[in-house]
Image 1 (cartoon, helix red, strand yellow):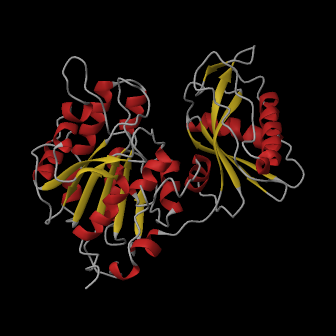
Image 2 (tube, rainbow, N blue to C red; image 1 turned 60 degrees about the vertical axis):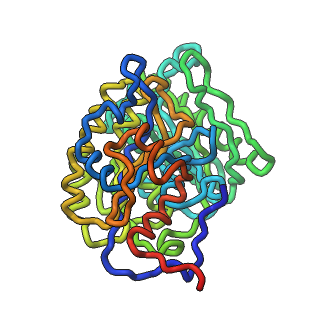
Image 3 (tube, rainbow, N blue to C red; image 1 turned 180 degrees about the vertical axis):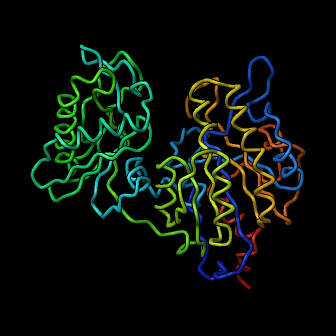
Length: 405
């Protein structure tokens, strides 16, 4: 899949009005429940999304390539119209941006999990019991005060959310960030060693290994949060903004920092941090009229999928559906509802399956009566790459001019 490149003359910049709302239910895609044959989305009572489906276009999206299981970063970049195989952004950089760090070229960031290690050094809980934000912040502050930074390197630990922490490194003592994850992805195993994946990253890998060793000693007397697992190492490089590429001023409303980071990476503004699902739409209402594209992120669908909680994921979808009338009341020209990947509850992890997508506008060709995987497979859009959603949104919003004579 090549990147969507719109010729400069095709983007009609400065078009007043005609806003676009992109609703992302994280991990939306699912698999049929063995007892009913219906996915979480098909099981959920979604009268408001179904009404949009009845006047909209339906389809299924591929986030990266067929058979490839996407992370949340690549999934969101695809939805924003950026080929994730060209713009390879590690989760660490997205998390760092999400917690408000102003990254500079050459900075290295990683996503850390507070974890529990037993007396033998084996991981007994990869998320340290999902501590509260306050408990995690206490431990992170303890580490920050005690850690000794290597010469020529600034080291910062920043709490993200619950067990999630950002490691930010800056300085001439660093190299590249091609470094392997230390998370073994299952309990009962020791953390994986820090390894450089290319010659240019050896200096950074040495720095990281030393820092992680220090944190184990600093936190040795903590009963649960007594170490870190690292993943998603990234060296920061600026990429073109959505305004530069598509003539869109974006605004992002997301509870979790990493998704705010993905939005900041492409130049979106952050009006505030919602405290709840409902608060996400309240912030949208307060911010209406300040942007061309409004990105709303809802996390609970993914969380419940990872928990294997089929009914919980159904409820999370229904909670978002109840807010759709408030979004409709703002009269956006285009509403897109989709996910950044599939997290089927019966699978408990991200998967490679296609993701259902709904695009509602006055110019859609309706093909279905409900929003669900089966209806989307038969929909007007067919199976498309997720990067195609942004040009479609621009076209439906009247923001593209004719190409050629």
